[in-house]
Amino acid sequence: MGNHDMINVDVKLPRKLLVAVSGGVDSMAALYFLSRNHEVTACYFDHGTEGSDVAREVVQSYCRDHALGFLSGSVSRERGDHESKEEYWRTIRYEWLNSLDGPVVTAHHLDDCVETWVWSSLNGTPRLPYHKIKNVVRPFLSTPKYEFSELCNRHDIDYVEDASNNDTTFTRNYIRHQMMPHVLKVNPGISKVVRKKVLENAPVA
Image (cartoon, rainbow, N blue to C red; front, top):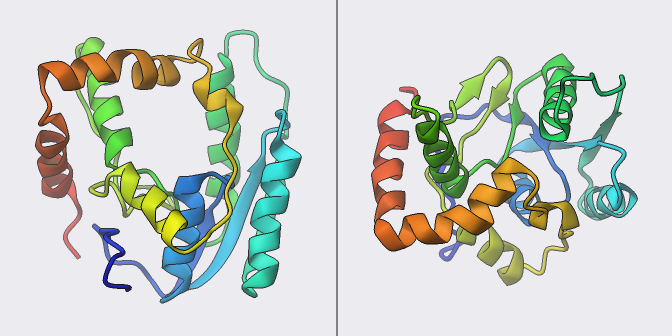
């Protein structure tokens, strides 16, 4: 690991990995970081949304340039009448990831944990993302998002900005963009509190 790369790995990882990559800054940073010490294959899921072709090309191009494996999946069913878009996209994406043979690493990070904690607390059941569910592993839950952004900037890694991430009609985006600034004003140290809980919950190697 480079002296300036401050990505924390909370769980022990095997040598051979699948890495879920959307083309965004977090997953591209994770792909770069893991490929230095692991045999990795990038796994891209096409949700069929605007900009997905561009994101796929960013991931494929990176894999070609760095001799990495590439797998892709796509939407396999229509959205149900009672499914929100968020729920639908997450469900079909995880259905595909869970169908893959081997551990799949995602780039979920500390900021995701804080948002999940705030969101779930509003519903009376505060919780944190698990480090592992089935074959999906989240080893970076104690690492803040800015570390991924800085890694991409330091190493000139291309990534895409998904315009839908700014759409506050989605609950997660509303919490991120509208609520979190107020949460941080009330409790600037919430990330430290949540990080401690994340590490307490990390599985023992």
